[in-house]
Length: 273
Image (cartoon, rainbow, N blue to C red; front, side, top):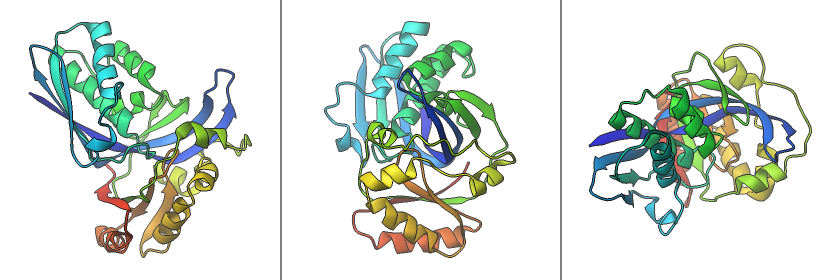
């Protein structure tokens, strides 16, 4: 049995530069990962099997096309291999801007790579990840990175280690609709400097259209920004999950208690890994 973590992905900054002719967007983003998230378990089996457990399992039940099974099939097409049983323990909210599906696909690729002796930095494996989705290559690497292009052109940067609080107001937003709502104004590249400089002086260009679609994001950001010890409060990806970075875990825990009083909100106390 092989167990792989699928930690939540954060876009600590996300600058959208242009809409491309192929329908994708040219962007620059600072990817980072936290300690917690979903878990993928892989075991030998006579026939392929896939099961979903965890608090968000019902959100994916009945899906005929899950990124985990797509990752399994794409790996097999590239590298071969026999049947297996995969269990996804789903703890991250769905369609929430923290790369849950991409992280799950990447964890599946890492588990299969371990099973078949493929290096996780094998260019052919990274190519499989890229075909699965723009965030999957970064999730496969699982370290702090600057992403360019669709997000697939990756450059490692020294990471941050600090407490994080993730909060989702209990709403899902469509990534396609959020990108469609971007005003197509290029507000410039990521700033130069280390990761904290990029975080502090960067932005998320998808916040305005996401907030227009889901006004509950306004309440999350307002609440997080008002908490003691917050360094930065921002939306991740296309939303609706937001994050707050803290210097001290005690401040994060105090903020989490305030968030817990909001009915219907999901939150996670964690840290940048």
